[in-house]
Image (tube, rainbow over all chains, first blue to last red):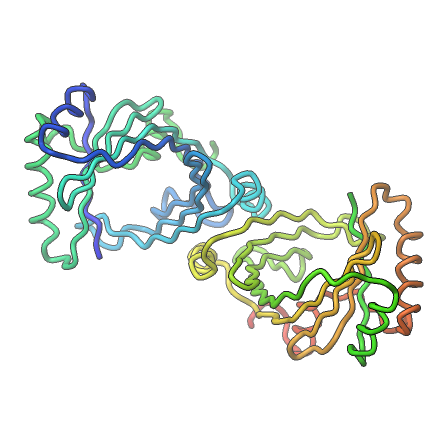
Length: 184
Length: 184
């Protein structure tokens, strides 16, 4: 299973939300997420294209590892996640092992489902509003075709292709702060 | 709060168990534990006196970090633990971060409570039978006194002081296998 994902900057989230609902998308839920990203003591995740984060989502907590992108075309990554019962102790374990917190990304995410697509409307603190459209495909040969379909869906919502971004929120926030991960 | 703990090798666990019950100890529970210990890619926990493990206990899983002993007298350590929902994914995250599994210690633990003391009778695979008596004290100045009280309790059970051991099961098992942590 491969996740295909397109993200775009949104200038008028209320209008986009109305368009999403008009297309027949079903609201799934609203999540308040705070993601604290860590860097390793022995390699630089900024260079290796890995990520390690603790997510707080309401009263639930998750530890997630994302490996480097597996090819240059898709955004496919190895990803492992566990739910943990205590974010503070999880942070203490990571710090004791030498991992250091880099930054925390706080966002409010509204999730919709439209057929096979999950649409997230994110309001990200210090970064603004974004839409993420995601689909799962079984065959990587259909990747480009699926990306094109998602682009068309996004255009239907009145968002131009040039608004799409490939960077993660972490990369955007670190660039905005004009700092790399190391030395923060 | 400081944990005071004395451990001793037991030759006849059935007889010891009868003695524990005769002293008035209350059975708390039986736990089947499998502890997989990991070593770090950037420092050797064998040298730094740290430990990182995933414990499977029935259908529950825990990630635990133990720091080095904080002084030469007591066995006090910094310890952080979280419950996780998936041992396999937790292992995948640790492996992806470069940590490597060293060995797994499998034991059946019967737990009793006698006043302020927790008594564990452990049957450890490939190591044999052990008793662990643990108490919590508030003031480290009472440490030696508390150890002496526990020694007397152990002697009441018919176990000689010379049977006591200071090594962890991990250290015992690695020594028995005549291998250090590194290179296993």
